[in-house]
Length: 216
Image 1 (cartoon, rainbow, N blue to C red):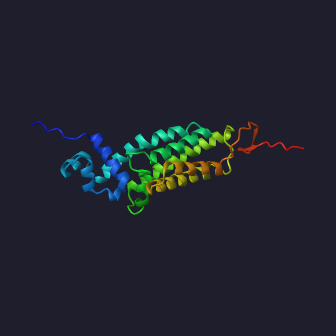
Image 2: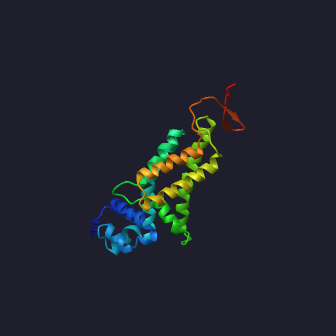
Image 3: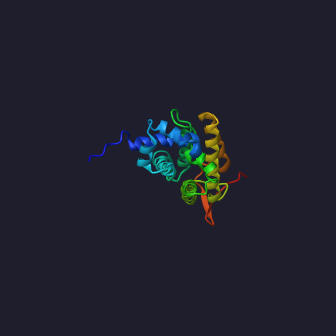
């Protein structure tokens, strides 16, 4: 007996579900909402294709990582002030793009995941930690090469950057404009980085500092 082909595109359905999770969170993206967003798919077809809401969310999270997070993370691997700046600006752009939910899917769902106590919480935490580690490696390399002079050690700064991203996500979801969020990013960079064009740097115990010449 020839099986009937499903009447929906699985990849498209995952992206449609991703936007519902992104917009409403895991709990708020009810099965009723998901089915409507996925083109009116019926429950039997949804479960036949994905197995469960949890598994559908895992597919959506993977798609979100590949389509939204990865391009930004690749920017920050360039190990320069411009890379950090471009990375945070792209984060703001992602959080405020017309036609897409505002903010960050990971941040939206992370806030409620602590009540789940499940593998989903671990996956979300792993994505946040990945962001921390990528930023950390970039800062360490940029500091060692003398590209950046930091006001604090890289690990603390990478964690602070994650807090900034979480705050930007929340502000975007509350309606803050892209221009305002970019101003926040600029203020953040001014606070935690010593921007300089002076190439005269020296290394002291692995830390980069400036050689200041005082006028007599």
